[in-house]
Every structure is written in C-alpha cells, then in structure tokens.
Image 1 (cartoon, rainbow, N blue to C red):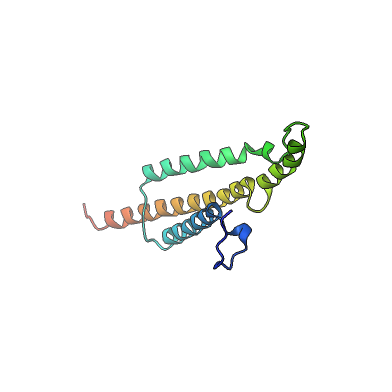
Image 2 (cartoon, one colour):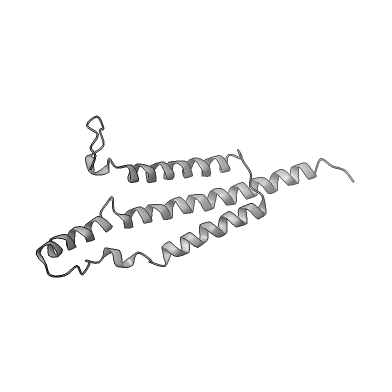
Length: 136
C-alpha cells in the first residue's frame, strides 16, 4: 500500500478508493444543496429516468447482494488458506472494506434521490412562473 508521508490521515484511510468515495459523498451533498437552493432544475421525464436508476441501485443494495462477503470464506485446509480466511473476511467488512463502502453508497443514493426530487420541483415551479406571465 502506498503511504503518503506528508498526509495527516492515518495510513489505513489514505487510499484512492476511500478518497474517491469521500469525494462522491461530498459532491452529492453539494448537488442536494444546489437543488435545495434552486440553482438548477430537472424536467419531470428526465427526473423520473434518474430516479428509476437510483431506485434500481438502492433495491440491489437493499437486497443484501453482498451478504455472503462478511462470512469467512472456505478456502481449504492448507496453512495459507487457514491464515488468509480471516483476513479476507476482515477486509470485506472492516472500516475500509467493500461492505462499508456499499453502506456509504446507500447514503449517496439517498442524497441523490432527494436532490433530483427537489430539482424536479424547481422545474415545475419555474414552468408555472413562466406560464403565469402569458395571458389568454
């Protein structure tokens, strides 16, 4: 593992995958805040398409597709297999593990869904405001 000696982050947390997930979480928070402040809009049809994809991924994550990863793998009875089995289990479910990151992805998707819904509401509001300026 690469360790950046200038970083103040502990080595276990100093990895590109974790940093990418942190960045995605931060971006989604900004997305949600931007929608809440009315900085952008999304049409109903585009919003429904986005929501459908978000919900498909949420359903997949909620279906416990990764449930077997937190179990100790059956690698055999050799010395190497016995030594590796607990390590493989640990790296799937520890603080930097795949399962932990999938849980964080659920949070990102929740923020994304909220942001898209708000952007759709912004679009409806803008459409009504513009329509109100035309007289019959």
